[in-house]
Length: 420
Image (cartoon, rainbow, N blue to C red; front, side, top):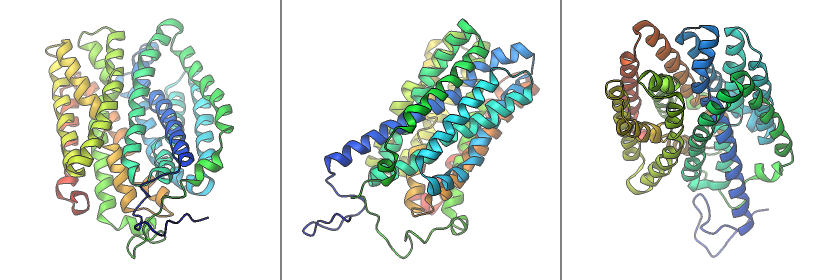
């Protein structure tokens, strides 16, 4: 049934007034996506706390252990277009349930793992795919059906869930490891994921998947719902500009992220202090996400994105200085600058992609773009581990991160579709 308002001006992306029931449902969907984002990102980043205990248990070098984290990112990135297609075909219930089932199985298997390949399969490939199944690709598509022109703000809330996950699960993981050991901690993660399948299955998914009936999409010759296909998107410069931004930025961020806790411990901080400090990045990430999204409305997308890159660069430089001057001032500056911006560009990039490529095949196209993030995260984290082992230090790792972040911002300086 179409809702019309004949005496009102034509709508753009959504009407200025929203029925109370639709407003409440939209907020419920937003809360659900936020909770799934907290769970997924928190479980993924918890590996930064497990890195040293696992390495100490088996005597593996840093590159070998970090390869597990690299595979997590790689699996999530490569699975993204398939997840987008599955969402388009089967809807959110199947996608999210499969994600929780995979996470529960993977963590349960990891609790009994004895060889590196077993960790690479469970924590690497399976957890990476599971996180992607409850992560940004399905969340972005689902929220796009409820928030229309306000999608970038909604996505900022969802991306801030990644920070909440880091804040809750990093210190929590360290406490679990200290009290029951890393194997039992993984067993607990698996049990929690299985238990969450029950309430997830009882939600009104048909209502959630339908979207808000009063959000309409203007159809033009260039951007008609059926105009964009994956093959056509692959021939458009905006696709590859967004892909490159995701790719190089992820290299820069994840060359550092998996080793932050270990780096801080090597710099002289206590393990719980290091885990808590990096976990606190979850708090500042919330403000970073919302702050950059607010700037988007005030000064425009391109200046907001470039500002976020400048703050990230400042954070990387502070991290480099910490190995020479380990103090709480520099530590706080690094956490605030690097932590608040580590995903702050995500909502704006997601909203940009969905505005350009909107249509029936959006899930497949957006999922394919985010392969860049997965590949960059995998390459960055693996390269960071290898470089650390070769150089027995962090200077070259930090230099790689700095160069990659600078390259990641270049598309917003030179590509017409991203400069507007």
